[in-house]
Structures are given as C-alpha cells and as structure tokens.
Image (cartoon, rainbow, N blue to C red; front, top):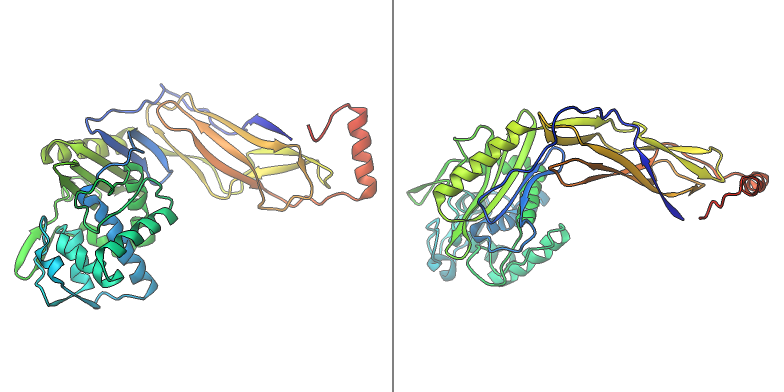
Length: 377
C-alpha cells in the first residue's frame, strides 16, 4: 500500500494576510472555537496543572450524568457529614447532621464554589470522597481527558490532583453540549443558602456579552484561574486560563481574550455534508473511482481579515480495493493555515462499489500488466 496525497478540490480562494496566534500573560491557556473545534490560542495547554476549584467541573459532571440518567433527582437529599461541615476554604455553609437537596448542593458548588457542598455530593454518591475522586479519574479517562488525575472533589491542593487546560476546555464543552438544561445554573449570578447570599465569582458574567459559565479557581499553588464560555450568534468559545497573579489580572485577561476571539475570528463554511471533496481510484471494483465525502459540514475558524495561506489536501492509502461500502472511512482531509493548529476531518465513501467478478478481475490484472503498474505498491 502507499499513501496518496491530493490537493482537495475546494472553493478555498481566501484573501487577505495570514492569521497569527495572539499571546497571553497566563502561564497556561487555551481558547477554542466550539463551533468548529479550532484552537485559536494555546500556551502550555497540555501541562498538568493544579486546577483549584476549576476541578469542581468534574464533580458537577458526575452529578449531571446521574441526573440525566435518572438515578438522581434535584429534590433528592444527601446527609451532611462532620467532615463536610468542617471543611475549610469556600463554603456553602451546610449544617452538620442535616440533609440538603441536590439542587441546593449543585448551586452551592457552581455559584458559591462550596467545598463543603462538594464533599456532601461526593460522599452521597460514592460513600467517601476518596472513592468519588477515584471515580472522577476513571470517568475522565473514559471521556478522553488524558491529563487528569483527581484526589478530591474540591480542588484542595494535592500534588497528584491535576488537570490540563485542554482537558478543562473539553470538560466545559461536554457540560455545555450534553447537559444544556442543567448548564444554565452556571449563569446564575447569586445563590442564598441558610440565609447567606453569595455571588458567583466568574468575572465575565454580566460583563462580557454572551458569557454564561463556568468556574473560577484559586489557591496559593495554582494562582488565579478561570474556565469560561460565551456564545454569540450561535458561535461558542471556550477559554481556560491558569496561573495568573491576581483576580484583577484574571478578569482583564479573560475578557480580553474572549473579545479577541469573537472579534478577530469567524467561522467559514468550507464543505457541506455529503459534498464530494475528491475521488479515489478503486481496484477491482464495479466503479473505477469512489467519491470521498464528509459526514458533516466542514467549518473552519480563521481570522476575519487574514484568510490567505489556507491549504487543503486529502490523504488515503491507495489504490482502494473493492468492495467499498458507502459510509466507510477511506481518507482524511487536512486543513492548515497560519496561526491555527492543523485540522483533520475524516472522509467517507459516498457510494457503494461492488467487487467485480472473476473475468473482471482477470481484465484488471491484464490492464495492470499492460500499463506496468502495481496496484498493491
């Protein structure tokens, strides 16, 4: 077999100067266009970092999954242990030996960043915080969060409690897309429990148009961090920053980068689902060629005023040997442009191609001998 590369037959006549990535003062950062999956900016995005309370997003996900599956309900209650009640740091101020509803506990975690509420949820679901943390790590791995390891439900400092900025962005995307009804809690500005009202610490809420989540984090070890998301006109961005030196720097930098992402980039449709990108030669088939098509619309995020330099090509192992089933993955579309990471989209057979019979195979082999080519080379 050999790899075949072909310039894709796309209408990619894009004008303007080349796009470039911006910079950030944050030690760890990633900005992702959720509409297209394009990474607009990244800095040490795969480095496992102490996430502080941003790791509560995984705690919330564990609860959301059970609510969606129906094994928990919002009015279900969990008991408050002495351990949860005495936990330091941010608090919801739950009372020991009482029971608190899932609805209140979730808002205690999401809006107030309550460590005590996080532990109540962990103990209620898994029996102990340690067991819950183990389940968090296992579930993260199943979701493809490969730089994540959890030792508690709160983000309390622990050398082995880490997650990367890229994993946090992916986690945020899962919460938004898989749980749209529950996700609305992240946009709530304040929550009162036991007569104590606390405001959401997310600096983008009410300040940046379209901002609707997710979670801040801060410890002396981690610095100031934020996992954020905003949506405008059907386009959603995910931002993760960590390691900043103050809450003010976190607010300014997150606002600047979100605005930069919406202002400087746009989503450009390149292909429709099922549109032929290229055709590939077929060996021993009822058709000589098979169309290569995407199974979804292909959209790419590029700078609004800087769209030149985009390159597209298709790679497959060829020639392709019949039979070929419609929908069978055969090739990959590669898109490259200055200022963004290369993007790949799988391409599939657009039609069925039957294998020819005995005499057809003899003819094909004679043709290969006459024209001196080896279909298996």
